Image 1 (cartoon, rainbow, N blue to C red):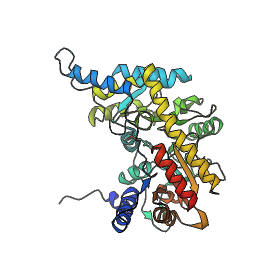
Image 2: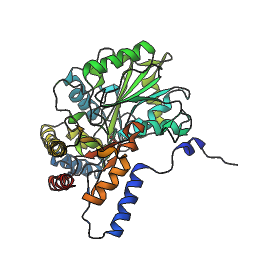
Image 3: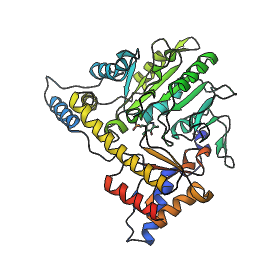
Length: 404
Ligand SMILES: *Cc1c(COP(=O)(O)O)cnc(C)c1O
């Protein structure tokens, strides 16, 4: 008889955003007149930039003619996009990454979730706490963790790296040595960044211990301070121990179009095996590449017009971030993030739990945010507000929170 993968049963029932949705629906049912503003969901709201739209139209028209029609895309992505990425995201920053080390995909979520497949089932993982839940959940599904300890809010056998106000939300090196280390900077949900010196310590630590760092740089484009690394390959020796994920989702509004990529240096090995060749083998079989049309759209992000338009979208969101940050600070909240990331991280007042503060914000201000505890036990007593709304909604939400 068929049996299910019972690792899935270890995942606690309700997912963060479905619980939020349910609470908001219930509140609306009781208060149909309430004008609810969401500063909660991690999705962009600005439309796709004109330069990208124009590239999409051109690519669609190419598909209509036999001479320019394209079928299956190459497994690892089209050269025109891989070249544009290598040049603009890496060589322009002094990182020696070549086009053939870039694997184009339909988004960073897939890549972050799937990368664990090329590693042994008994590898021990370490994750920032709090962090984007995909890293832990995908390893739970693969059987790489123990059971969920509800009281602790943790999975057994996972090394949690506390990111706290004390360490500036950038993790200290652990005493127990992991095999796979997931780092995410700028961080979702805390909005924190890691300094180059500190990231270099992680690279040195990974090399010393034969570990691999899986570096999620989905929010790299939001970095505004000059000395913060945009890529882990800005650190010496990272080519020997690090894989990097990037996405066009938060950078260029591609959450609905779907485009991202993974970088695996050619010389990166584990167990004497090339990780590049394993991931290429996986792409060849379980293809999660992006269509030609979308890859052309991605190429347009690097054009002069595209770059300028995307910079102004990011500036728009970051105006919101600064507005929220300053407004909450004036209202007496303990806030961080919001400088190099579109997320503001605040400590809940009056010792409230994350969910208690969620309820207070919903009922007293009709504002929806994201409870920090949904990102790991270290997020308890914290709360995330995101800057992806309109200026008008953001200003109104901050006004209401200040009055609360
Ligand atoms: C949004 C996000 C992603 C990206 O996802 P896509 O699948 O490319 O849309 C990856 N990592 C983090 C931390 C994110 O917040």
